[in-house]
Image 1 (tube, rainbow, N blue to C red):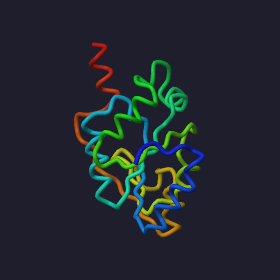
Image 2: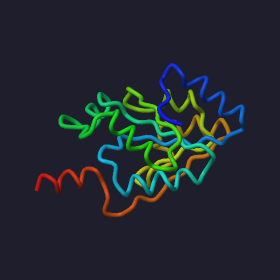
Image 3: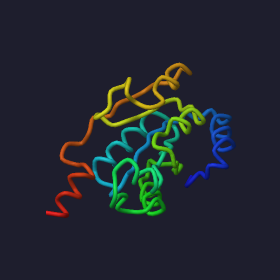
Image 4: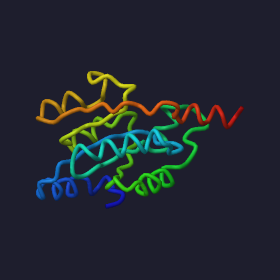
Amino acid sequence: MGIIENSEIDSQIKQLKDLDKSIVFTNGCFDLLHKGHIDLLNKASTFGDILIVGLNSDNSVKTLKGEGRPFENEITRSKKLLEVSNVDFVIIFNDETPKDLITKIMPNVLVKGGDYKKNDIVGSKEVISAGGEVKIVPLTEGFSTTSIIRSMKA
């Protein structure tokens, strides 16, 4: 349990699969971890044995969200994720999307929030074609990092 370094991904995933563990994967920026994130992670963990969270690196968050983001650095964000009882591992990735990471892990279940449609989820085609599932978890209303940041600036 903890952070999986990129150099260790193959061996860690092989160990989990050798133990016949069902792997659930979700990803995101998780900047300013809030109730909506926690609800997503808790629900995602119910779909298998091991929950792995792909965490956008500081550079990829800045590319996706713009200047001033992330609010917290990748080490702080990964530590906070690991404090969520149902999160088993965090992998920090530097790409704009987790597609390479997903195809490397090839989880049994790929999970995203309700603001996504199955066909638009990066890695969904690969996971489904390998016999896995894609699950969409409804968003918790009233919680988003963007709205929290807006209210802080108001």
